[in-house]
Length: 258
Image 1 (cartoon, helix red, strand yellow):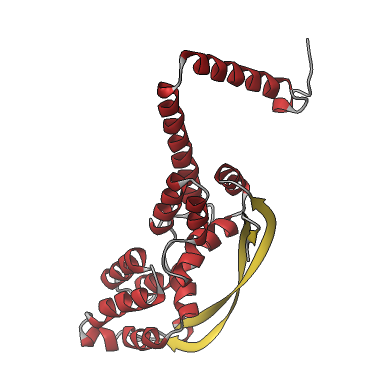
Image 2 (cartoon, rainbow, N blue to C red):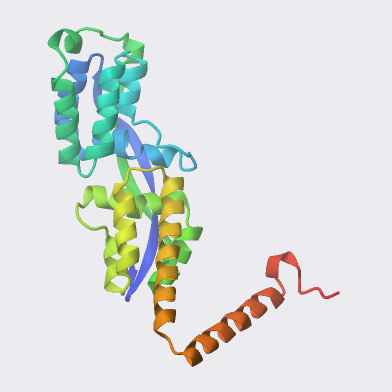
């Protein structure tokens, strides 16, 4: 799926969506269908939503709480469903249990009443995943972060949200980073994948946190280095900066000289 030798190939994903054959008109019918819904249905309505709005600055609402709030007009139950999705969406079993706890706590008179019109029914859908190899293979953690910084939202969603949801435990990308000597990156990937943020925020935070961890590591190494090693490192940094500034494509200057 994504390994070439010891490298890690980034994978993107698209979802083929079709009706699950179920509709809900009341909170009770929604409860009954959730109790029997497949993992792919729960995934689409509760987990896949951030991929539909990848550049959003805020986490978009899940389909279940959006319908209960906007159509059933039960905002209290909607808020509790939203909280259940954000806090208990680690797996299909955990999510199902959390959603049922919320709906079963609604008084019977509210669960069975408030039937919405036929045209406003909640139509349950199924999402089937189709993975797309990107051809981008990282051979070390630093290259992985660089590749992630340039990757499309589908790559972030697949590796940090979808894969861990269907396969509970440390994500494959985090395991690879740890196995290749970067425990700090692995920890960042694991924590951000569970944080329940929008994709844009996840991308920004992963890269920022990894850069800070690298900076701390460099500072710690510098304090242990000898005076000669520090001078050599400073010289190499200056040489590297000069090379970047004089490249023909640097900042669009085209290697021009005055």
